[in-house]
Image (tube, rainbow, N blue to C red):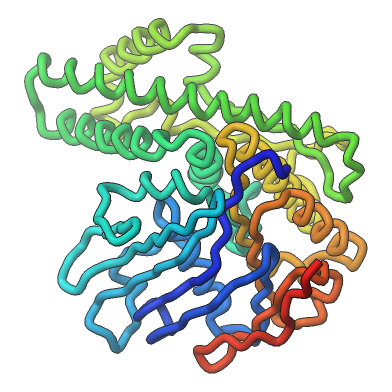
Length: 382
């Protein structure tokens, strides 16, 4: 995947972030592992990196909750990124006494975290996602929206605006309001909801094709079949954007009494679901074994990483939290080999350094202990 642009973190700094008063890590490898006991702060480092792109980070935590407990309420993450042989300094954080996230690029304030997508696309797989296939549909929608954001930078703002418009409609139905205002709001909901649904559907279609294209790679991770399902998708299948908007607007108008009684909007893409099957077994992922679900999820992330590079022209940074520990040695070695082939920077965590013995010689390993990081395996020049 060398034809794609690759962003490489060469320095990462954190201040008042979670358990770290201050931490700076010089980085020189494409594959980096952090090892140490549970609770040492390995995942916190991955979370810090996840804030160097658009979104709410891999834990989706409130900004105020990220600040170190004995600090002044502020926190920051900064990094030096090398791409196209040019260095860029990016940073984000929360100032004391404020509520909004601040983003800076080369020392200049910029509006919105979406600007960071020009420098980094970040994907992650963390233990909290282990129940993705068996959990509520809202988790899978959020997962799909993250996948979509990586290839469509405007998607995050569309989803946010759509959810805001929905809440305003629900409030207006409850409190009463003019039909003209309600109609205007429903038009906005229809436009935004249609755009969100189409973007999700396009991501699913592209991901399906990428999974099919990987069939000859002989990866030890089962292939998935994915689909976007829901009442809204079923009722609007085959319709163009304009016709979908019109139909959704009529649905909203005709459903006012029902939605007012329910206290919420009962139809729309906010209720859609990402369905995943184990392709070889024609079995819903939710019915697969725990190990198969983990392997399916890894396969999805790998396929999406390739898709992100193909669509955006930029190889994504991958964050894999405690993934290696759940794989047998053969699958672990195959994962490391595939990650090396992808060509982007990868950050992994584990409690045992032996889990990363199969990493290429060009990788580096840090021990995380006592709120500090120590390089215990340096990258060897190729």
